[in-house]
Amino acid sequence: MQRYDGDFLADLVAECHARGIRVIGGLYFDNATPVREHPDVKRVGRDGNPVKDRWGRFEACFNNPLARQHNLETVRHLLASYDLDGVILDDNFELDQQECFCDHCKAAFRAYCEERGAAYEDPAGTLSGPAAELWREHRREATRRLAAEVHSIAREHGVPAGGWVGASMGSMHLASVLDFLGGMVYTQPPRAARGPLLVLGERDFICLLWAPDADPARMEREVREAVHVGCAAVGFWIRGEDGGYEMDAERTAAMRRALGRVEQDWLDYYRRAIVGGDGRFAIVDGSVGPGELRLRLRNTGAPASRRFDGQIPEQFGPAH
Ligand SMILES: [Zn+2]
Image (cartoon, rainbow, N blue to C red; front, side):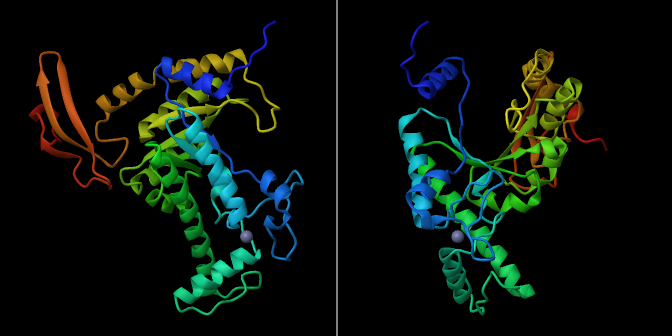
């Protein structure tokens, strides 16, 4: 047996790059360190007591400068130390998804209300309709600010920043501050991404499918579905949440088959249904030669009102 003294992440990235694979670093914001080092950064519930997660651990409030700086420092360190092709934030960066009633959050909400000339109400109380809406929008804005800080760090390193969100319209406000969004769409069919794509402008949507105990035939079907609706990348989650499922040979083979023909699937589908798929794309140019058809597609940044827009060979233009 040989002892390994290398830097595993650095070696993994190098091996991937040597094979033409790009690596996006995923980052789950760290609660444990800030809570250990600064006990008063804990996320606070409506009753004024610190909140625990489902494993009984305290969480940190990422509006608290100490918890925030710790995590932004981690992003800086990650991008400065490793040759990553991008970074993506994991589940817990959406501050609008988890309420906090700590002093920082309340003070920030008070300032938010004052800026808008609205009366401040304690968010821990029963909020009136307009105040509840303000509280929600305030938390969405706080999420955008946090994501924008990560985005600017990524930009300094010349790489894109994204975030894992649900494949629903509720998180699409983040398209204004991140380069791409990803849906862990194993709770919804991949075609759920079709709606969000239309409001993403020129941003990409990627999707993650579920593998551990999935029906292998369904795994293959879902990859095709994701490609057809317009996802820019498709991948699989390969472990159970608690490590309770392990990938077996049958599912590994299904994954290999499905991912191995993604490009061919994309081509086949777009040949057959050129105006289906991602509704933002329009065909802007095309030529027919002996044995070939070349089309140039452009992301118009909005649902394209004309899917054919330009010099299209007559044989392939829209039916009259
Ligand atoms: Zn807070």
